[in-house]
Image 1 (cartoon, one colour):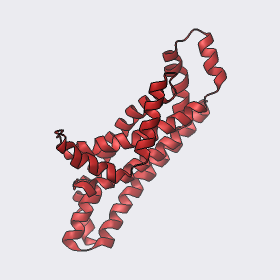
Image 2 (tube, helix red, strand yellow):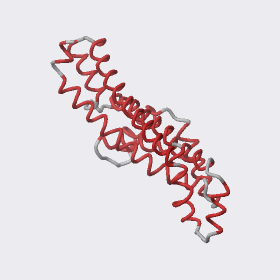
Image 3 (cartoon, one colour):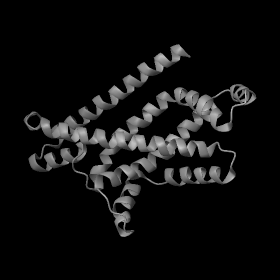
Image 4 (cartoon, one colour):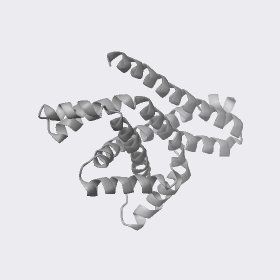
Length: 215
């Protein structure tokens, strides 16, 4: 345990970087996923086809493969920016497909009668979507979205595979290479991930309970 206690600052910095990657990825995935979900339920055929094709294509590719394509492919295409944000962009594009399908499932759970009533009151399609459909859909899929956030956090470890050594798994690998104590170092990393994901799950359960009471 000495290698862990003497390098708590390294684990803290790695955990902070993992949190930054996860938060940025989830926000990007949420923005892109909501757009795709709106396209999926749109009455405009080309938008539905585009969103359906995107979701199908992205969910058919492993995340690590997509990360590799972004990290090594974008520079070949002349698009160069920081490695960290390249990883965030790739992960955001990947998880947007899953966010889209989660939200779409929530939209399907909204009673048709409420949508028809909103239209009868004279609300436009955009107003029905923003004021009636999406608020209820997002509340109904809070727990699935929390599970998605947990998946984002855990899969942020794949950033280490494409050269982001600042995040938690990358720092753990460097410590293991230096001290050759994989059981201790990776057990400490696993504990950090477990605490983080457990906290997310607990907060989601509390928030879901409060929203359920209000409903």
